[in-house]
Length: 484
Ligand code: ADP
Image 1: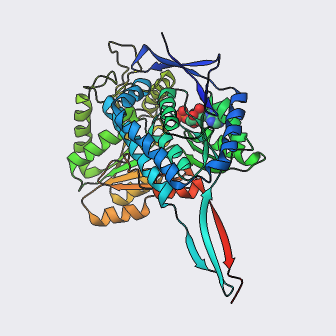
Image 2: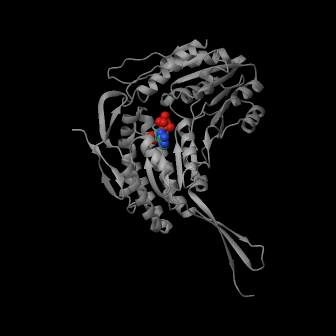
Image 3: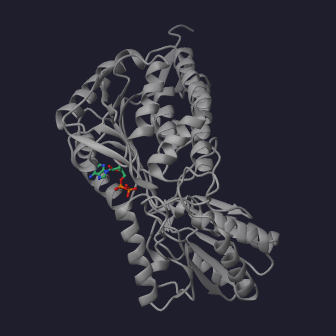
């Protein structure tokens, strides 16, 4: 018997006739559950409930918000193995990655619980004699949270956790491929004591549910993570409507990892293999462009291939495997198409790229490494979002930097070098929101700001204390004593 899961609207679990069947990409015969698809009316009801709840919630004592988030964090931490397993089952990342992500979600919620208490302001003397001014941060209102499938519990936790910590209400629309983790997170937060209407869940189609949220005049802001075209569409719709919304858009990447001649080879290979291929390359911070100088190029490629040959690819829930399937048929088709494009462009498919058969039917693909890639090839410019990386050979640091920055994206970048001079110069001149020296381009701390430049991001940063920039609105208040 397949379980059915409803949307949460004004504290009621609401089911519908229209159901989304959640399947396991490691085994398409394995059905995880059936999840309600919200209708347009459901979204309106959720927004109305959030608007109504905002009046009281925005004035709750900080300790109340802290305690709810801390309780939710504790439950996520305590159930991390189970939640991680569910996540891996519906998304296809390995069990280690799934459980790691669930633990990360617990840490994020704990950090955000603290934010409810830490939020402060400034007191500045006014220009008039006897006038004091205070600059404070207040909750923004109703936030539409729209999330992608690749981090099914971490991304919702850092968006929803921040929104709630600062006193906002939320209407949450998760990606259709991963409703299970979203449903669990919402039910945990509800159980932790959120008042009715403060957090609402509307699962379903991006175009319909996301579209209604984006255009809704009672929604004050949208925090979105997903693809560039969808982000651009949301930006256009949000400002075209009756209420121009505050926006936070985290989109794609085509992240460079530069490897210089003086790099520690083992470290560089580790950064590249992990950054490019783990999580099947399905991270917006994946190192999809490996920019390697002449002197180390051949040794580097050889060592990466040796690692790829030894990688175990298979069912995500089998603890022996290091890489699971890609997320669905559509992503697999995209990956296979880019493999053909790369070959047509005369890049050399140095290793991998074969469709793999496993005992269970799933979307298994061998990681692929292209060499002899030129900066103007499509495989070097477009985000693929699969386990496919391109090696671009360069003559030295200056060319490496120029190639690294020659992209419409600017999320993360990395350099492997033992030279302080090049490391320092790269940190300053890399056109990315996040720069790593001797570390992979993905893997980020939850207490530090996250976000990119150029086509990768729009709006204030996410995570850590910088979350307040997006989820609060500044007030300037003047006071005079009225007597001398
Ligand atoms: P991905 O390829 O990572 O799924 P998308 O940008 O397609 O990236 O999806 C990210 C999120 O945006 C998902 O929750 C999706 O349902 C939602 N979405 C898709 N289309 C729209 C839209 N037109 N308006 C608002 N949200 C959308």
